[in-house]
Amino acid sequence: MAKMKTVQFTETVLRDANQSLIATRMPISDFKEILSELDKAGYYSLECWGGATFDSCLRYLSEDPWERLRTIKAACPNTKLQMLLRGQNLLGYKHYPDDVVRKFVSKSVENGIDIIRIFDALNDLRNVEVAVDETLKSGAIASGTICYTTSPIHNIENYVKVAEGFAKMGVQTLCIKDMAGILAPQEAYDLVKAIKAAVKLPVVVHTHSTTGLGLITLQKAVEAGADVIDTAISSLSGGTSQPPTETLVYALKNQGYNVELDQKALSRINAYFKPLRAKYLADGVLNPVVMATETDALDYQIPGGMLSNLVAQLTAQNKLDKLDEVLAETPRVREDLGYPPLVTPMSQMVGVQATFNVLLGERYKNISKEVKAYIKGEYGKAPGKVSKELQKLVLGDEKPFTGRFADTLEPGFEAAKEEIGALAHSDEDVLSYIAFPQQAKAFLEERAEREKRTFKYTIQEIKE
Ligand code: CO
Image (tube, rainbow, N blue to C red; front, side, top):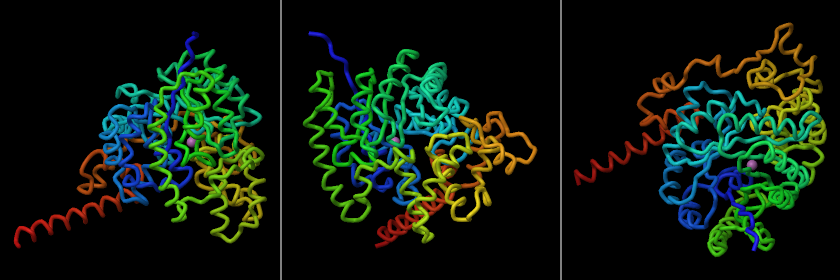
């Protein structure tokens, strides 16, 4: 009997599914009990940290993100833990100095991360090289990640070049990241084939079910030789989340692929998350709209998360009637900026600028600070040409910066450590402070208060 190809799975329920369906509001208390089951199911990896989880822990859940990671690690000794990292932007929205990037990466690995999926919103490899280098030095797996988008200037040759650049850096795997769910089945097939032909590394495919393409796209990606696919346990799959794990396991096994996931374990995991989904729906944390298929993204090429942000922004300003105009303006702004992929932080920048342009009744009457910085070259190299008029408006006769922006930044770790002082008990706390100063400070102050109270109680108990 011919030996069938093995397909492996990355489970996203703790990170991307959580982020895409319920805005990353899942506290650790909701999933702690199922961790050992997740660990035993036979996944290639559990995507469980990074992305928006870090910010959300500090901002909304009053959780220490590092503590969360250590808890997951302790419960999952057998499965690789994976995080998503925005290269030189880490988990934030600006570029950090190299010493901070290195410290963040090495501490992530030290606290339990095995695989770091590293990308840059512009696919500018200068913005990922330090994170990749430190990941390798720390002994973890670096997954070089290509942001997939469509535009008149993006094609398979560009993507293969990005893959080759990552391979030169020594990454162990490559990932095609389709944040908008617009990667069509045949494109996935051709892209996986082309990358595998050029670079002899395992290929991971990440997509979203938003537009309904997800399942067919992953099927074709596997046919082209993809080694790992990203899926979410079925009760938290679909819509803006990933395609369902069990469905793909079933379908691929049925076609003779070798899948080493334990289907009984999967059904126990799903049975655990099903009542949670009901709870999120009842609480309003999960809006049924995000679970539906939304084909508009195929026309607008706007990721689902960005679409819901635009709706929220306009609703807050009582201007929802302008949505169609903003949706029409968004691709024009994107074109003016040289077709950046619409992924964080570019998706926010393009969305906010398009909203300004429509609501102020004049294009670029107000240009956001971030768009100005982008045009100055502070985010890296634009994939295509930035509009001459817009460049003139921001820079006058000056030339944009063409170097690697992080080279202009002073080291930041020691200064931040001094600034936050005794509130930080560890380098991890300092890194939380660097990543999200306000939220981390509030969290650390609250923690200090809590500790003081516990201390008082202890004294009182002793007295009594
Ligand atoms: Co995603």
